[in-house]
Length: 253
Image (cartoon, rainbow, N blue to C red):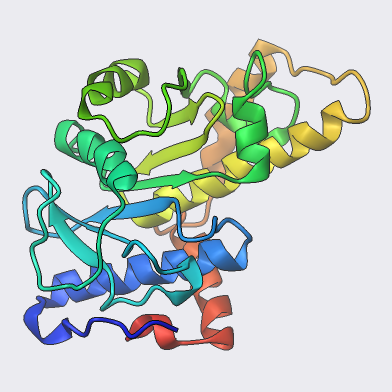
């Protein structure tokens, strides 16, 4: 594993907690098979610091990310610490525009999972043909593929196409999910990924059964009754952190 930049002494308690939460999330994503070589990103705002967020060091696999190796940057991509790792421009450009313009986008996740890319690459995108897809009917935005996201001028179109939604399929590209907290973003990504996997399996078998709009409305109305107290995704994410701790606790360093 690459040697992590040890910067814990220079961080506040709130920032260190955020670093550990984000590092854990990278390890969880890898455990679930959502890593993509050294690419893709999860970003998290630094508590009590306007315009500062944490991102993975470019060059490390998700399984190598630690709390101290995360890079702290401002909204313009400038490093705010002495971390020796570079930042992937594609990750900065895409995430920074949302962190800049959306106060509630505390955590942003972008992946290239097989199922997510497949659903983003078909006409109609995600269809209401399974339990998880019904969670999100009417709540997903779409943005046409413009090539690798390294040009800042694409940001205006990304924000415009997102509108008031907080989940997006980047067409021919993958999944983009935002949350007011990291656990909320995590559980949304998990459920959206499951919806994509099940759609992929269903379409391979034959003609799917679409759920009627009035049933989708009832499903979405009642979902809160099946949630554990503690906030969206909190219990789910805590359970996954316990699993990664059984494997390896180095993410905490």
